[in-house]
Image (cartoon, rainbow, N blue to C red; front, side):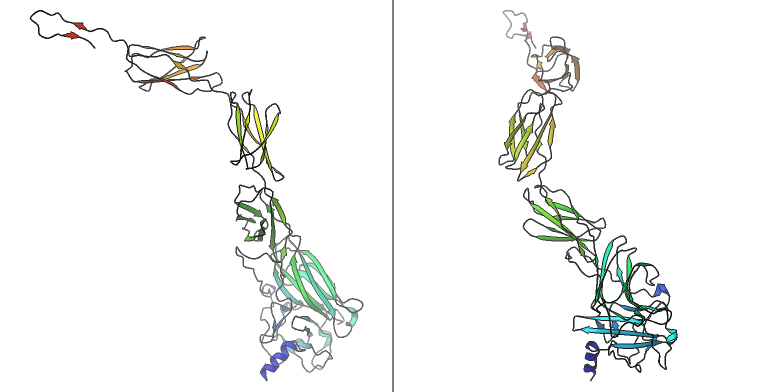
Length: 512
């Protein structure tokens, strides 16, 4: 018997077990204590980017064992409290021709109704509102200027745009007095800070009407109210609501950092905590959750020049349009050159067409070899000339690379031979150059070369085998490579022989 009764409650015509006294929701009448729970989505680095309805239980599924419509409450604006089975008593003695209609009466003899219709197992339509109905238990004069909502709180982002849709239809008989229901979007739980409000009624032919509202959230929690109302003489609306839907709209596409064939990662920027999804040229999808700054970096294989990567972002039930990025080319690199250089090597991508532009505007092209290099002949360069180069491949053109022609350093100077018998060292370079000599003991001497390019240094005698070095620095400030010599043995004087007699048996003398 119990099983049959439960099944009847779930699929039959009445919304509540009218004999139950279990509370729907016990909350204080104070506004700060009437706020329903807000569900916060948890995030992780592999969450799928799928558009979803931000509303929970949009089918209005009813839990008979709790006597609750999950995730929704019934809010009485006039009393500023949630309608519960403690505050309100079922009135089963009132007979109506609507079998899915339940009367509720509060301590002040105000009448209310709750009504629903089951649409198979897919969804229900629901309604809550003030009722102008007089019996021996109630008085219609008490039920004026009332407003009740089926209400839900939703997590939102301030300043972002949302779309709310719900179907509405009048039930049973024509609405007394023609009052409409109310679809209200509020910035607070008490519906005193309404963002958008829409009258809710059926179409002239009695068919259901779609209410479609766009609004900009003002705070991190927004309240959806599906309501009915009564006026000052007790006329009231009777509207049912079904299949509500809430989604973010106007979600911009994320941006993708420039990507070249040499990159092994790509950075995508969207909204903080959004699910960012990239699609690689081979169709592979990778999703990550953006950080607090809205960025996420993806490790990817290096991609071919000209291939396309797309990205979308998803947050709060919305999925953006896709942005795209074409894999491009880095600027080629140019080898260093100076005034005397006769060739230059450009390095880019294998098979790319390298275009070289000389200082005078002359351009030359070559295809990079299997090492990605192309070498060009050049001449007549001057210090500070600029040489430029670009590369193209698969329809993509790189940024420009460049190098500045450097001044040519002087040739190493010439050092005259130096022996152990010498004391003056002669070094020959360019006229006017600064000649610098480095002695074996580390002493450094400098002189300016004369008109003949020579500079003479008195360095005293040096040991045989010692190494002397010299460089020259030209007027352009460039210093040559080092020249060097090794000290050789000088001319050796003949030894002296002491006198000898016929009686001597040894010879003595003086040498080095």
